[in-house]
Image 1: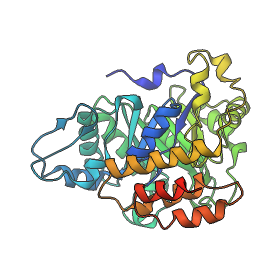
Image 2: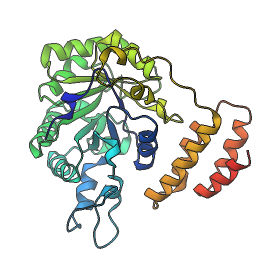
Image 3: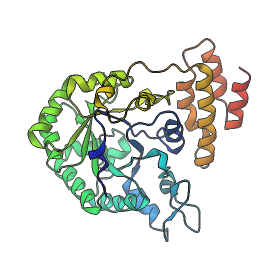
Image 4: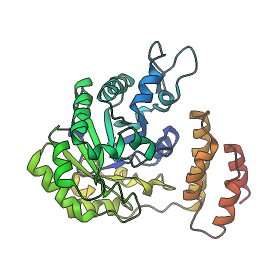
Length: 348
């Protein structure tokens, strides 16, 4: 398989993997309005993925979405790993503290047709850390290296890693070289420690140091910065200031599925234009509400077993910053279906 990372224009801009956010429905409306250079799935447990796959006799690929099915209903985690060809290249993010599970999950992800696999080594969720996974791996570099090796040996998919600058403090000089020694295709560095969560501002002053360590240890690994990136223009500035290869954007996507549309307005192969993206187009309230309705219907269609309340975080993001936003938001929070949400909005 071709390593898609080697063919990306520079600088490149990625969507961040976020639980209950970058699901199939949300990625679909993003793809329609302006694609990032790389899509990411929500993170999934490699252990759970392998468990779910254990009872399935074979893989069946549908014409519109790649998905795993069986005689009975598909297992939950497998059902979430769907994507359309409009989302390529797409990376599946997984987590585990068990190299054998990472290996098995990587093989499954390869069979599902993904373009890459990313290992989460930065999630601060207590349940994830209790398993020795996510940010807990920062405290166990030897195991982290073993996990990267297991993923690389499992298939020809390019393997990347997403992590933080340290656990309780800045540990870049110890932690980053350990990852670089295993030659993943790319490393995304969220510029906070695990202890800081998202309670303090991301320390972009450290990105030059990250790049310096990369250049010293393993120049072949791409470095991606992440944390508090406001938009493409802000991302462009951060690339110029730090020298990193790309930027991953997360929370700025909330309520703004047009975030990456600037990439489509220029020659994607022209790095000069990519460093001069210009101001984003304006999208009014009616467009935002239409996008929210579309997201709700896609969510119901694609994820019928998930509770509609998952969309509340999107409602908060789409319905803000205008007169009457609080009242409309309160009404929409009571909706239990896409039809109810559309009915409330139609009366605005």
